[in-house]
Image 1 (cartoon, rainbow, N blue to C red):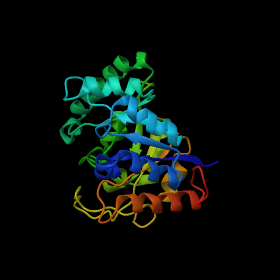
Image 2 (cartoon, helix red, strand yellow):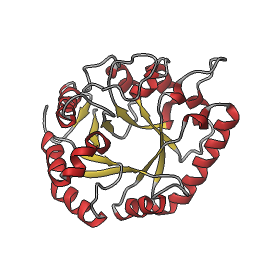
Image 3 (tube, rainbow, N blue to C red):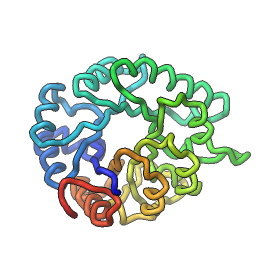
Length: 257
C-alpha cells in the first residue's frame, strides 16, 4: 500500500509569502493531500486554517524552534491552534560533533518532547548531512542519536541529506527502523563537498535511489516532497515530483498522476 503525499511549504516559501492562497490552491490542484509548515507566511492561524480547510489540505506538521529561540512560543501556539500533531525540530552541526554532544542533544530533544506532549504534539527530528557523515571511527551520529531518544520521539528522515553524508541510504533507514516516522523525499546531484546552496532537482531527476529509500521505510506516515533550492519555479518541481511519486505507485494523492 502506498503512502500519502504532502508538500513541504519551505519549497515554495517565496511564492507563499507573495500569494499564500494561490500557492495553496496550486498545491491542492496538483493532488497533494497535506502541507508541512515553516511559519504561516504572514497569515494568522485562523486565516491559514480557513485556506487549508477550504482546499481539504491536512496540516501534517510544523517546524518548532527550541524553547528560548526566537518565535519559539509563537510557533508553539500556532501549532496548537492549527491542530498540528507533529512538530519538526532541527539542530546545528556542532550539536553532533562528538558522542558527548550527541548525548546532550538527545537530552534536549527528549525534554522538549515532554514539554509539548500535553498539547498532543509528537516531536520528530529532521536531519541534514552532518548527522549522517561518519566520524573517523565509522560511527554515524544520527544512529547514535536515535538510540538515545525516548520512544515517543522519532525522526523525519530527509533522504537526500542522509545520502549526502556518504553512507548507504537504504541500509541506514533500515537500521533506524521504527524511529523513522516520516520521510522528506528530496532529490539532487549529491556532489561532494556538500553545497547547501546548490539547486536540487524534482524527485526522480537526481541521483538519490528513491525506490530503495522508500522501500526501506514502509512505516513512514507521509512522503513529504521538498526542495531546498531550485533553479526554476519550485511549484513546477513539486508538480513533477508528484507525478513521479504517485505515477510510480510510491505515494498516493487525491488524483492519479
